[in-house]
Image 1 (cartoon, one colour):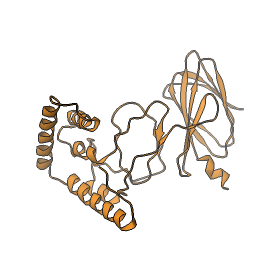
Image 2: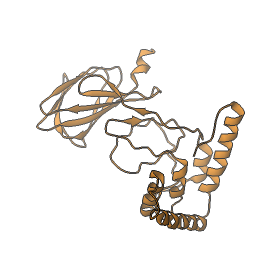
Image 3: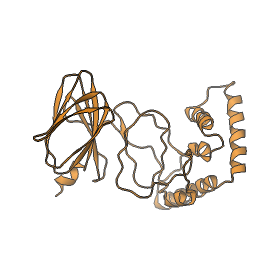
Image 4: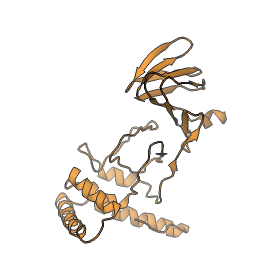
Length: 243
């Protein structure tokens, strides 16, 4: 969905229109939702015999299989359909809706107590709260490729101070040094096995392990007999530069 936001009044009207349409959709009765999805599914299956479906249309059919009768199937038309490649990332500002559909990813989130769900989930939903809190900004999200800190480390810097994420991919037998930083860090071993070593501690990490690193601590990581992939989350380095 694309609504022209140029000009102050036009932008406000566009957001108001989007808010109204999206809220009415998400608030539709179960009976109305089920009927609409059934009709849409039948039409798309018929169209698929006559032409190639768009990516969004194919996505809707896929979601209908996973979550039949769910309002999230129809809300897909209001969302960007983003496919990330390995090593790519995106950031979402507060009060922006999203849904993970497939594949593996690492998520880092600022402290929050208001995760609100409204579709594509068996968990509790709070549609009224969700629709009232969204920004209704429009546009395609910025895809981050990261900043290479070394041959093995890539850093992803969102435009806010709360956090940054480093991705480390070490070939077997290779080592890398994470310099000491003023804030604490959390490391997640994603794939493989290796060792971590500080001035006063050394340990083995395997897939799924999480390690807390105190502030002002240098860390040496070495991959074992296979590639080691891990992620580090910490306070955005720009925050310390501004002190």
